[in-house]
Image (cartoon, rainbow, N blue to C red; front, side):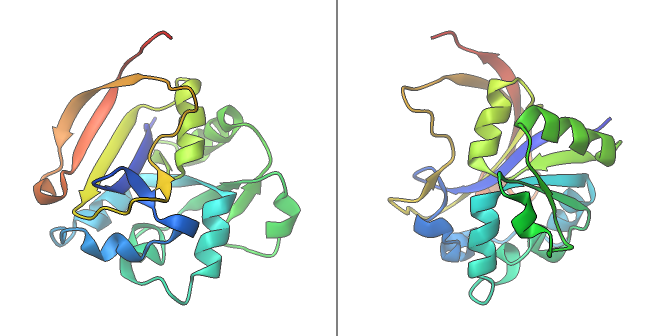
Length: 190
């Protein structure tokens, strides 16, 4: 069985998207070596996304280019779950499967479909919920040399919550983008 990974690229100041889910800043990311994005995409069988990100991507589809227009810059194909309380509104989009369930059920279903491949969570809010349930096996981090000052934070937990991570690898070829993988070390008690 594959792992459940939370992968993201962030700004230096900790945002995965600008205000309104803006991704125009993504071009500041250091170039990745040829083939790396494709190899990473091949490992993923199912992506779990959130409704806000889905809506923003649809609204910005004429503005987004390259790496942000589609998952893994178009190198990925598979099943994408969109978690939403209004799944009927996405019934006309054959490219996604809308689910109205909690994150644990979404991950369970995703693992069934992914089989030996990974499940990739690309929503900060869904990843936070998955962390609370102990469902994240790996954290995949890239950092772009840009500061946004506002937007969607990597991790936002009102009142604070600590999660410790242990470095498991440096992604070859992505050293300039601080490409790293981590596994959960422990959740600190509050």
